[in-house]
Length: 499
Image 1: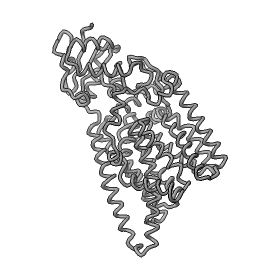
Image 2: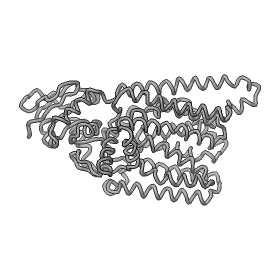
Image 3: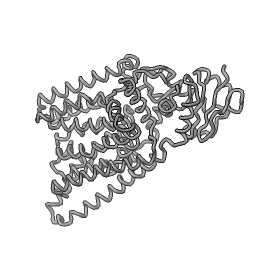
Image 4: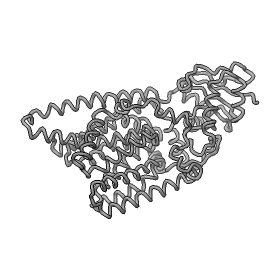
């Protein structure tokens, strides 16, 4: 179904504005963030605004490890926080950056199809993709809200590098990309597979394109090594698993299957995208979209081998399938226009919109409500502020790793472990010991482990109850060794005995 260019642009702007407004509407239902990682961002921003540099080591972690994270996103949000309070800046900027994918996908899809209507179709799929709508930029502030649009804009510029302006834009954004997030490294296998697919079709690749791929790959590798050199020396190739504990690693993909992945991405982009990939490789042999097909294949392989975080992998996969879906959409309506059913072309258009509404828009809004409902709650914040005001500065507080950044950011107290597992020795042992402290029935075993890590307080939250399937700490009845110093929705116990 075709729209006039001006109408397409108006609809595109309306979709963009609606996406931003919906994300902000749900985000402002709570004054707090939904993820522990967002509170790590707050810590980085606090460090930048106070010292001018990001966290280079963590004074609030029992194992005082060096922090290895690309800092550009944190500098960007820190700069905005001078104008807007950080609680607002993180939500507004993340929602806006995440929604910018709507525009970038439009540009890419138009480049691949030449049709603004098909490009608008891909933009709508992207705007209301469940995994993207919620995880990238709704009530969170993490580097992915900037890294994802930046990577796809780099790929868009790559398809137009014959024009000087896009070559310069490509180089400018590419240089920044690995300083935003380490996921920039995914471009290297994508480029390699793209070159292989082009070579298989016996098409001569321009020398400028080959040189740009070589430069891009070497530059990204150099920057990643710059940030993660200590981890590379320690783990070697195993760094790809980021020292994630075995228990956590196994649970990343435990409940994942094709149906759940399709639900998170949306039925329309998955089906349309797969059809386009098949036709482009085996029927049409369309090298124009091989770069994006390469991204789908690389991401799928990484997900299958569990070499990329599930949410990140599904976001990259979903956006790329939405872009490719424009090809099939354009083909369908071009075919209809040539048949006697041309006057009824509104019927398949409305049918596709209804399917998108059921399989993408409704799940996105449901996810959004669930995300807000499960955000950090007021009672948790009150308990953390109490800890900040009432516990000694050198106290070590035990929480689950997923609560670590929250405790350090708000309570400003030292913790045993958070979800930054790199450079932590004996990570599996530490995670197992943390779980044992919460779940053991034996006071002696608990005290022995608390003494081992010099833990002064136990932070016992509803989150820990839900994750570990427990209702209470079984060994805290001995008042000589454990004192309940804070009792509300959260319980905080002081550990007094040592072994």
